[in-house]
Amino acid sequence: MKTQELREKTDSELEELERDARRELWKARFDNYTNQLDNTAKIRRLRRQVARVRTLMTERSNANEE
Image 1 (spheres, one colour):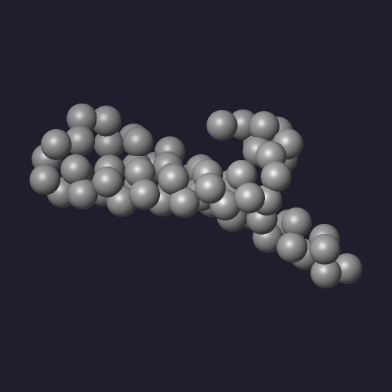
Image 2: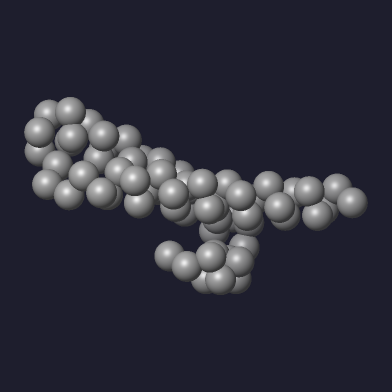
């Protein structure tokens, strides 16, 4: 998901996206350890998605504090 699309989402939607991405990341790591994951680039993509969402949430919380 593009950063611009993420910026249009509400805080609760971002939290839900992060929760889902973390769950999917855990599953992908587990599948990788058991040699069931075909696309190992999925782990990197999910880690970056979590980072994007967390960054936006931090930006918003910092903006609210000012």
